[in-house]
Image (cartoon, rainbow, N blue to C red):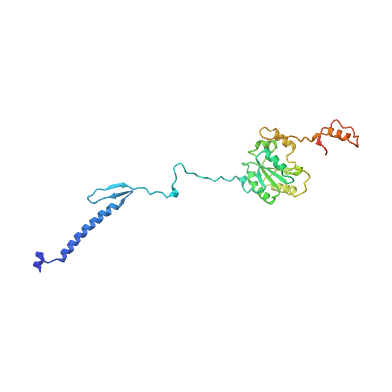
Length: 270
């Protein structure tokens, strides 16, 4: 048996194991070489026949962004919502801002017998800002009252003509009576505003067309060159002397002699 093993005529199990082991080493080397080609190095991919081959480095392509993140150069638009200014908050349907002197005069004349509150304010006035939420609450509780806001900074020249120099400031107008109240009010003296609202706010029968601004205020606005406002005095106003002379000539006269100092005006026929 030993001779056969020495001469090689008998197959040895050890020899078969050795051959299989050698073949395994060859297959392992081939697998290692294939693995080396696909192993990434840093930001690059490598191709290698390690240990004796060369290493070739190629730059890896960046992964494309999702479509919802793509933006064309120079076409990115940022939309920033406009912050609401404090005097625009809590507005009620019966509150609005005046645009001009003509708008103020027309709004008062078209209000009929409705009570109109004119609120003079300034964006930089701390007292106006603190009082605004309470005015809005009162407007909500009194929907029959019209609240008009006048921005002092936008209509400074008009406010000068109306003799408004203290803020916050309010004027109340009611039908044929015209201006019925005028005062300055702060958050601490809100009772003054509530009292005026309770006094002039209740419904009542109208006694004539709305008077609106006083004639002296209308003439001051018309004389202001900064304003686009025109006013024509009432042509029905005649000197009292002429009116009394006409009445004296009517049946039922004569009248007593008219004093020379009678120069006042009144509405003809009243």
